[in-house]
Length: 543
Image 1 (cartoon, rainbow, N blue to C red):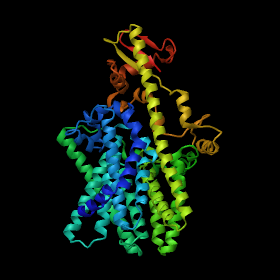
Image 2 (cartoon, helix red, strand yellow):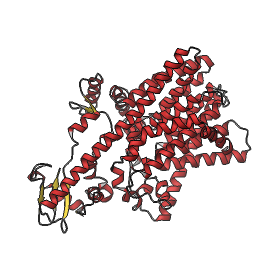
Image 3 (spheres, one colour):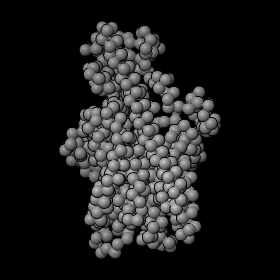
Image 4 (cartoon, one colour):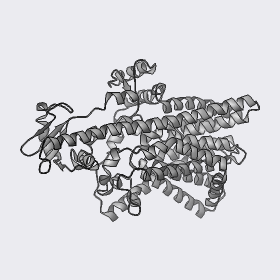
């Protein structure tokens, strides 16, 4: 298996056109982010994940183990983002290798170049790339692609029973490691496998999915691999906790993750959330608009292929594949957040892959030229949008860090006794309206009225403008005031935020925080005069 994978990867590494396009896509999409890193939520609480072991306790063990060899527990701009982009480039190559192994060597290299560039630069990735260590997303894409390749190899070769067992175990272990980085990896494997099965039906159909038995058994094997992977992840997590002496943390109970069983009517809410977040928001948010367009093309391609190949199972696979993108919304009880929906990038890239092939296959020169210009424009616009959101995140971050610096200056200038008394932060912080305006839509956008109606039904406030991005619009300060209070108490992350800026403050803990809340009405809010007040045993700052 590894020999075949290595041979396919080498093909792309040696292809100058492919590599040049991949490097250009990487620089265009991530050049700004690499050189303008922002101090984000997970950057502040690194110690909680690595020193206290919260990451291992909730099942995200790989980075904890990696940190024992490669130091990653400090906010280091450039180096970690640079490594992440290199891994992401490799992931794109591996996925291209999987496609070429399934379809053979007859397709133009442009198809793979477009696929890889789109996978790399699909701008929804900005919603998760801004997190510390990117939640392992580039690594997830890479190792899940290896697992998908192994699955296809296993299913299309007559191997001895012992070899088959080893392949299944190795595959489940790979997926288990991927899930250990981020739970969304399970969905990436599921959606990726279904996409490859569809592609196989388009090509030589070596998986022979033309009868119910083959169709069912292939899905059954995918399910088994995922179950094995989840069990293995649980065992590895317990082993790591025992070896490193990590205490268990309560994270999400089974009940909180299975609200749908208690409230079946929640399904209607999920449907409305999906319509809002994954359809109508697309009128203002480029990656969602692109997803909607790709979804329409995906349906057309699936229907056309099912009719042309006379294979109804292509239609079934298409329905399952598209449904797999949102399947985790059911146990979660809400529409899957953008940062967890890594499957969309694969779907959009695959649709562009097919579209590029159909364009280049046309015998009309005009179709070839105009079609490729449009495809390149789509990829370029996605890279442009990715840069836009990285720049937006940097601007937002600098704005908030300026607030931190100003508060620290006011504490010093006001002569407050910060060397002996704890500083307690209360209230909530709202981002500069000028910044929020850049990521929100008003009544002048056609989809706003529909979104407002959906929100009214769900009893959610829309306001004059609706913020359509998710993690990109979150305030670092507003999060840090209560951040992870369940594990460490209130304000701990706020104190760490000030430490990242070079200011040493004494942490007051939850008891002083609750005491300060009793004085909340006596204080003004930042930046009005009187937002800081000193008491006998602590200093309070109100946002």
